[in-house]
Image (cartoon, rainbow, N blue to C red; front, side, top):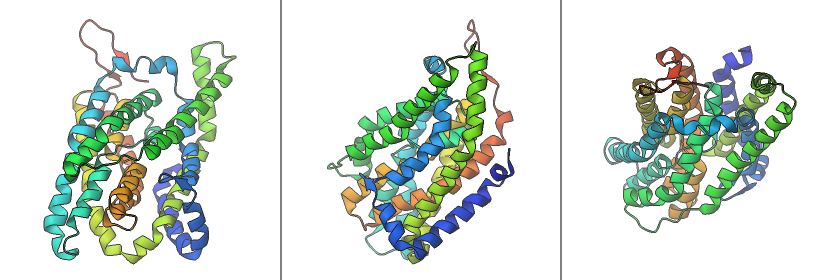
Length: 358
């Protein structure tokens, strides 16, 4: 590990500071960059995420991907956490903090929008950044792709009904352009680029071992670009929202408290379940990361559509973006130091050969 990677948390803190400063020093430039979007998906951020996701997509082996169903435990955990636990705990935390604990500190009649914003975040599992967290914890790229794809498929059918149930409204309009565009930009395009790179690179390999060595060497060389992409993304996101942070620091802090509890709580649930079920770390870490992070583009788009651009609900979803990166980096640090909690291979039922983690 390079010194740059070892002190990544420091670089992220500096990127956050640089982003806030940039937002104040060059608001015109930041405004232009923020305007390069469609359906709440910013294209500049999308390009930076490609830098982060591409190395992991090169590592995806479709031959191994076809055998992912042989290890169902990680899939079951991510489905249960994301769709049967997370939306409801987020709603409960929203009620607790904004109807009770923080009620004296917020404007009367606004608690509902705080809660709504939290629900919109909690019902949208991550699509893009989880690939980055998986890569940083040496997760199985094939399994991570399968988990994200499964959650995306469920989201198409379950997002609107769960949000409608928890918000008590029936006119939820899912911004399909945001959902589809995000999947295409963050999954399909980098995956296609990664597959083409892998095929071209391993075409002359004598055997699978040589092919993996070639891929490993290539991803190691381009990994610095992934870290630079992460730092640039952090700086840009905080530049976009720097004015909000400086204008309403107390409100931001109040919103951050339940989001932090939810994030660390969901990680603990998924990570503990994976440990108890003897899921290999290469599957367990990304599995817990998916249950922790959020698809903030979708949440922001729905919040704007339901409550308006300058609503409190939209502000809550934006704070979710700001909280997520530091939280996920701390969880990456934790996951990388607890690999010994997990087995080297997944134990299969009696009479079957064990499935070795990849």
